[in-house]
Image (tube, rainbow, N blue to C red; front, side):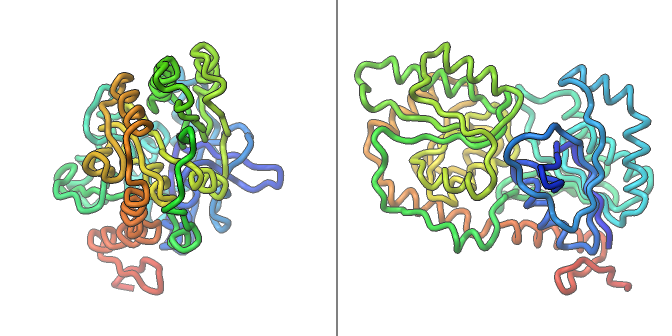
Length: 396
């Protein structure tokens, strides 16, 4: 069976000509593509940059022109070039047995429409916050409405959420966790659970540098700790791992807040180096204003690192009760975030125990388990069987 993925993920070719991207996308596509005989990735061609993780070696990559600008300008660009995008996507979708669209996003939304028009088996996964919040756009609402409609037919519609959740996103839809953790990493990544914390504490952020991630709130919270004379010598250091459109603004904010001695930008790192950085961190801070299911939280817990995060995108369900695997604060609340960091810095914490709880939480949330769960759902909906690790028609 042939899988075609239509995504708005930016990918680029490195110096050797290898297609690479960032985040968990390459590993997820490898795990999902392993269920099929053939994999085509329809992605957006981005500008070459440092770092990057290789896309699956056996995948055929079809790179679309990047829409111009951002936000409204980008939407206008997509509409103006709609025929190019629809025709390019349709050429690849027509040859596929299954089409996967990781939404939200303008390009995968077009992929959904093309797949539906060509009567292809469609697997759509909503990676943003299914629950409406202050960051929800009209395009998000359109996408979710279309998914609710398509779910009533034969298409597989999923929304990201923690494993074991009892509710459903909508009729005939299901939650599914999302991860970037490979099974072999459970063996190869061995955090020192009993190690002493750094003095001062080492904080880490891993993810895209963009406004919805709430990093300006984190920098302001850190600045408030630095301004407190009772915390002299205790103000934590922050390492920011990732890249994105807000990088220049964040660097400017660090200078304005006079936190240059507290904040380090590492840029985009490959998977191995990102894990090595997390293994030395004391706390991971993810101050998102909106989120689907926070993969970065799982990556931190793989390394035995507790997480301070916000009550969006199942942050509370992932972290558990206060102090279980970390701490949860309201989104966009600088004072609450600063208070949580102050508690972590000044109050006693049983670090070996909380690190062990973090590690145990992720041990059954691997890419292999994720792909297997998707295979089960697709098999039930489309009368397919998993044979020798591949999806096959039962009739065949």
